[in-house]
Image (cartoon, rainbow, N blue to C red; front, top):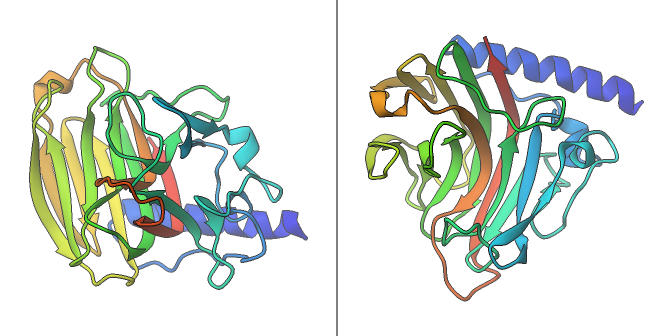
Length: 260
């Protein structure tokens, strides 16, 4: 039964991803089973999960092998399936374990290859991350999708980050250079708790972003040419305090990656 269900979900999410590449972003999410862990509804064989737990500077990570499938990993505090709508739900508190290069906690997926190695693709070709999601709660600001720099130099910056704020404003942050500095572009507004879609596409030296059907494009500075990239998605909280209960909750109804 679970095998049939997983096949149906896999086929549905491929269709959703393909529609996103074409710019049709009002596609319905795949049918989600609220009784399954996230890996039973989503293809998590190409993702690693980073949690806001662990030791200082060294957050816990969960491998794709442990995430995928109907018996995959779930965490009732930070990463779970919503029992009412089946969404893959992430929560990142204001106070949690962070990476050495960030002051903010996250419950976030990092793109991997199917052989278990870290995804690390060049700017050549076309690379697309498509999602349907909603944010029921956020304190100040949360990053829900990003393209991060991989190998090619010493920078630990993202190429881009997609942010959501409590008033519904959605911003794309594009990095000015591998050395840092980010430019914000307002790309939409969706009320708190309402579903919306995004498609992040990197093709050559262009970033193409579609939010609820509205497309914008940005030129990637040549200083990024030596770098490889990878996708991230989830709840990367952009504020901190001493509270472990306040934070950003993000719910995904579809999430797909394509490379061509």
